[in-house]
Image (cartoon, rainbow over all chains, first blue to last red; front, side, top):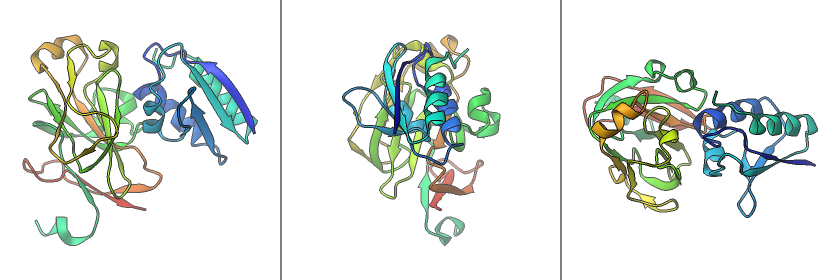
Length: 85
Length: 157
């Protein structure tokens, strides 16, 4: 299991557009990919809606977890990027 | 009319009064492409947004511009009020229900002053989306449906 914690780089937080882009990227992997913010339940990274339920604002720390290290690296990089520009 | 009773499925209604349109006509490529989910959209004629189904309110965005309901059958339906409304950070929106509550179709979830909001954002077109398309599919879509009839029917895959 690989985990990586990154800071949200999209100014709007993980809302519709960034969440959809992350969910689409996560859907390309067979392994489960989970996202969480401290103190909250993990959510499935392939669901844009579940990503939105994290309520992760710009600057929030999000932990990515998966058996697939490449998936963790890709999803973490997306979260850290400004996906709304 | 018989058509809607023919097969079992969950019926999703418009969450607000206005003109129902195909998702492809939404003026935002991310929504129009179906990347967030498949469904339909409404150009609202009033600023009252209600639950499109019976179920549990699983999301009320902190910024109050979106909410989602999970039906008893498990379909997740997102109502996203307007385009780029996340940037308003909640200004102008009022939430009437809280995450975790059971809601009925037609229950008012979020309201806003439509005339006041419209100039502040690119569009108030409101997509209504099935976001767990892995497990559910849209079985029927009736964009031209009369007020008060279901727009889409979703069914477990």
